[in-house]
Length: 95
Image 1 (cartoon, helix red, strand yellow):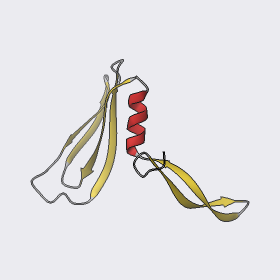
Image 2 (cartoon, rainbow, N blue to C red):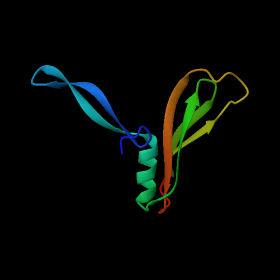
Image 3 (cartoon, helix red, strand yellow):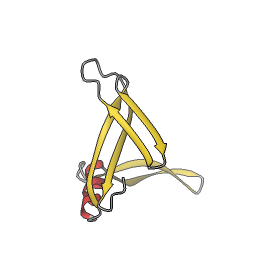
Image 4 (cartoon, rainbow, N blue to C red):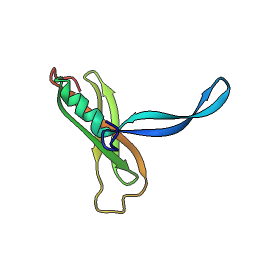
């Protein structure tokens, strides 16, 4: 539903036959992606977050899989956004 929360229609220049033409492109928003994941019945939890310059973010892989740790630093000026991520835990235990 293109309502600016679940999805949006955005006009973009798209190359068609070596010419650029303007086309409306369907872009799903975060709320829509989360809603669809929950409706699948396979997700036990899901979240999104933003990592800023002053935050601590570590990621690593070991024999148990891939992992990450994000610690927000809410005591200083946050600075620029460095990345945005989403994580989900499935009902079968997979992350």
